[in-house]
Length: 74
Image (cartoon, one colour):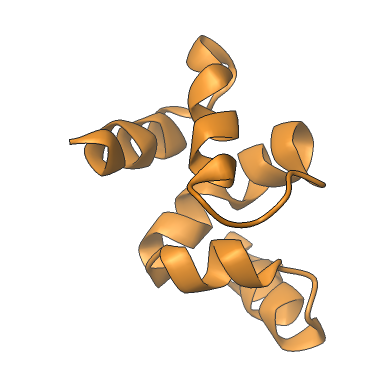
């Protein structure tokens, strides 16, 4: 199953927290989904807490997610 198909399945089943789904575009969610689940799953929603959590992971993030986080900080 492709990464996009897995993401679509997760979205349909409701496994993506509303904060991540609402604050990020589809491409951004795709880029950061694995990193979110690995490092920030359970981070409370609101106030940019999820992006802050992702940002704290530094070089542990995938390059695609790191770009999303850096672009969002601008």
